[in-house]
Length: 248
Length: 293
Image (cartoon, rainbow over all chains, first blue to last red; front, side, top):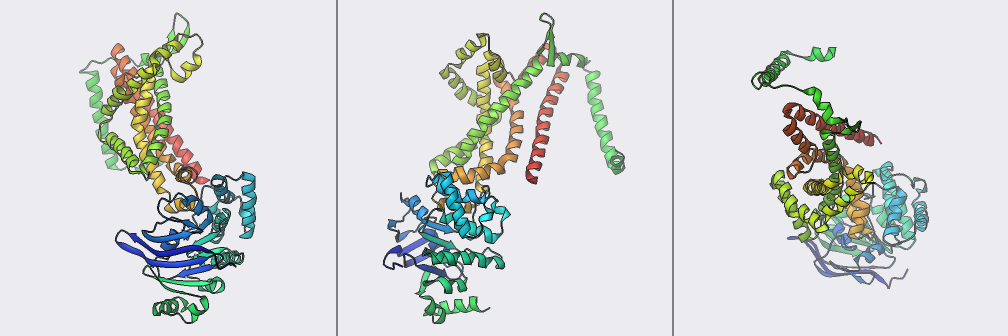
């Protein structure tokens, strides 16, 4: 793991929704191969932050550099950037009018201009990796939530992404399906992918994270390695939050 | 039938009686006061006539009109679908100017009576277009040719081609506003996450629209579009005002020459009803079938 190469560099970033200060003075660096897990109460700006990382939201001030590309509203390179940065959503957001295979190939074919045969080969490879090669010809609605989310992960991977963003990937899933998705994410982490994950799955965080980030009210309150984060967090707010979600 | 009769209560009989008296009164006033002579037996010959000289059947006024109405509706429907889709997409554009232009066009059409709109489109647009393209002379040229059956099949009498084009353009422009609203609603009904997912794999706005949003939106808007198409058929009767020789125009002509006011209009109403009701039943059935899948 080459810790020297920064993949995501956030400096002094601020974001407003009208008068609402959604992100306040965010500073964060994610290195190549690093796994960062962001947690915090809802409305704290976790999702907004990672949505800035692939230009689904724009920051108002400060600097955001991803893989050497400066991100700002209207940046010409934003489409190239999005091909490098995969995003997995809470609600899966698979394309319901396309089969699983078509969901995976449409990006590579239409955006990267790869031939159909080659795109399908890649797609089947990744379906294998998320353990559902037999579902290729079904439509998303025919799959369970866990399977759909795994297809969504594969769809991002098919773009040969270098960074993967996960926006509460298991929050919309029934409990018995959470693990199959987390397993795939752990395997993905083992391949050395750079990952930023917004989640409340602390078991996953403990297993995978290199860095834990705690956010509250649009601010980063704590950044620390997991050992310290879970046993001895420096901020009181973070301790309270962990008590709440780990209580059961 | 037995069940139906059993369900009737005294208010039903009262309503039936009132209706009976009402129509009886109208009937009596036509028969008595106007001294109207019904000539239903002549109507069929105005649908399909017999040419005694050439000894063959030919499509007479009413059938000609119906054919023209069907043609115009079809072409205008297709054109309105294309224009309306563009308009609907424009209404959702991120560009303010484009959005405002589309909105202006729509509000104009919504707030000006259809007849006025039709006249304005006719004089300001389609007339100018026909002159500019020299369609009049071109169509006359084809009308003089020997082998123009194919042309006539698709466009009717070629000497009337410019007026058909006018009709199609005017009707399509008029209906495109409503199609545009339907398409806009369809586009906006697609969850935001779909667009975000498309963007997150690097699609451009056009690709996002073409591969993700429109295919889903179009599926959703088929039922309302089908209804709009039925409205379009009915609205086509307004074109008679700009001398497009469709069913209503032909009926006016028939009434003027034969004085069969009641028979002609009842027949024409029946034509429109059969076409529109038939289509609406057909669409309903198709919809049910596609729901099942």
